[in-house]
Image (cartoon, rainbow, N blue to C red; front, side, top):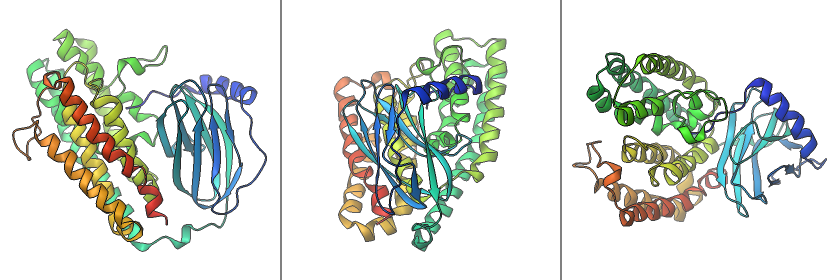
Length: 378
């Protein structure tokens, strides 16, 4: 779930504003040195414009008044790696793996729009050739996992879309949450493309001015708030299926690295913290716990594939992650009839004390999970 990026025209305007507002130091980072990123409401300053290929570390400080998002982007706006929701006055270390080429570092104050951008050149060399073969195996396995989830989502989405287009509210409600599970498990992969997620998974409060509301949550509103399906919803259901087929075809081409897997696992926990625990994600249907479980499963799968290397490099971290994943899953099991069921309790039936318990468990896992990327590149 992410806000849409600006259109090409708006992006060009934003780029002009970027040139006026931003300031970049003219220096190169030596192999292994971190790039300092200072984000604020109208600027995005980086300590280096060039780094060697391999592992790059961004040490981010948000000195603005708004939560910000920092991304490393390909020229076509695909995301190499990102960190959302960096609060005012806070810091975060983002580790990514990059090949030689041209990139941009973007700061997005308020987590909206094109962002304030700085050029980043990645030169040949670095440490990418020295990667542990077990990490290549992890990447291959995770790519297959992401593809499997997309493949399995399509039939479930077709069932949901058919019910909508048949005007069957009850059947559509029943099919809604299952159709989203595969997406929620692998959402960072979808977000890496930049354009698909805003079409299929954006919530009403995250819309940009003038943006058409499409996707699952627009249909969710019709099914639970309006309790009716009209011609517009039937057309939107067809668009949703088209976009999901596009996602399915593009998953195999996604840029996946060990660090993007680790950072993606942390992003899934952040999704839980900012949308699922608060009840904001599934505002109309209250199926938040289904999404919650999907995010946790996706994060755990990425971690388990990286664990052979992470446990070797940082045994204490792996032990703590095992403990916290188990604790969170045990807590989630309290809200469903069996471990094999995704028939979770409606989230509007979960009290404030229970929500705090869930939030505390998410935070307890998120903290060590934020260290996973660094552990796999030691």
